[in-house]
Image 1 (tube, helix red, strand yellow):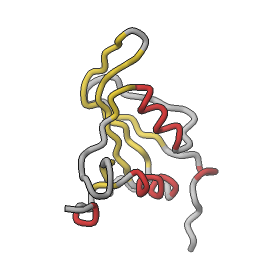
Image 2: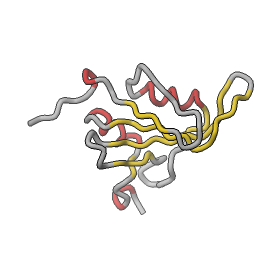
Image 3: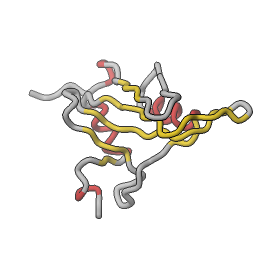
Length: 113
């Protein structure tokens, strides 16, 4: 199965395109994080949610391997989100918690129409 066969998943490249088009990134906590010395470890996944909330796409590791991408450290998650242009971040710290981020309008591509 490829990414073309699975319409509800997206690669990092596709995720960047969706975010520029106004999709929100939703961070979902999959396990209660724990602090080890000065770092937080847990399990977070990312979903792209359309502006109208009707379409959702789950971030996978690559176009050829459809495995859900999990972030296991808070540092890795924050670094990933910051690379997309998010300057203010919120991260759920309880299992099942969800937080959405929207790219500032100045960084979104304007739809041609």
